[in-house]
Length: 240
Image 1 (tube, rainbow, N blue to C red):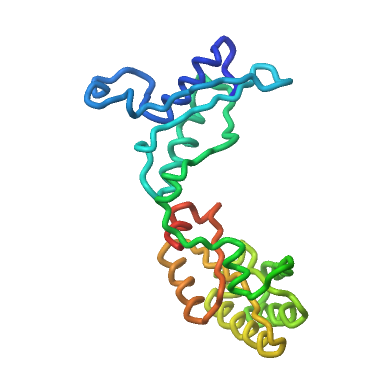
Image 2: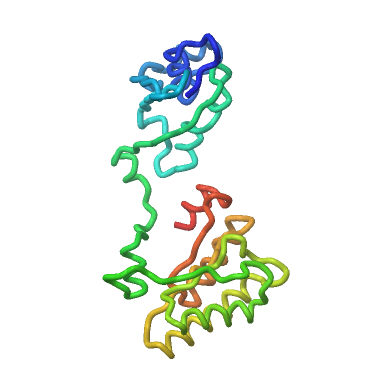
């Protein structure tokens, strides 16, 4: 954090902790209706950044009761929300977040890490070999499927949609899903290997996202993908 000129770093650290938990810009009578000491965030340490002028690392801890269970959205609303517009600060950046196991366990999404991908594709002891289909925009669904087939037939373990590929006029999502599924099964039959393709289920609404994911599941596709940076934490958790 970088305080405004004349503002002590201790004041800024305390302000960050307060603004991201129970505090506001003034004293309100409703403060007496709860236990602020129990719920407030605490800035417990401040270190100057070596080699930088007027820059500090503030360490802030929060009670777990401040966060809804299983909600990345609520967590980030608190720690990267209004506090970034606090007037006492000239600049603020989130450097690191440490989440205790007790809170991590409230997230019930599937543990789809690299081991699950290896199990799905039956590939062990080496790196995956894959690619994103290019050009990422402009191909028809039929030609897109052809590119997927050529890549998988040629030795790739998987191919992947680009994040930009959703359901544009030149290639609607259902057509892409069908041609990709055909290409994948044909490549599997000819190579005798399990193949994969990351079908992009990202959509303009959560309902359409789930519809696309369900379609991929019905087609027997082993993997879908979702662009959480634009689709959002809520949509990503819903899909999981």
